[in-house]
Length: 219
Image (spheres, rainbow, N blue to C red):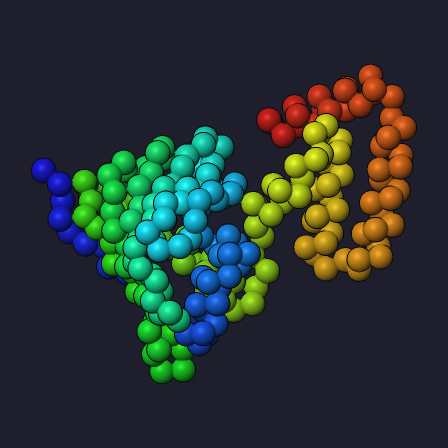
């Protein structure tokens, strides 16, 4: 028999309702916080964010296993949040469809974020969703405050053209320097130097170095 209990969670943040909603409404900011379970990463989204239209979020969990979130926005509340349906394929969040109310409310000098969700098939699924929202809303609060939360999806898209391990390693160094605030001209100079010299590495040597990199990452 299904559990009819409803998950209720709330957070107070110092940012205004407009600031928090902007981090929800802007798709490039939303992908920095929404979707990934604890320890996991978001790979990309398909579909539409229009009311009533289905969407699909592709993810990997903390162990690198693929999982998919599907759903649809039932109603958008301007500047206040949304109502949606969610279901999953893979992971610990169950396979049934649940309904989520995600709303923002002015509260003193800040904003109160409220989540209501259910029903659940078990207490274990409810607890999994509690951890899920703690991770997601935690990132939302950081994004709304102006913090540059690292986005796996952005890095994934940027690195798409770097197939060989040495190219990916070089990209990772350059992206890390950029996120650390290195000057654009310094990054451009290093990028030119790296790719000029990496292109000269003999194919056999590149394969051996790639094998070393893979082995180190798997340790």
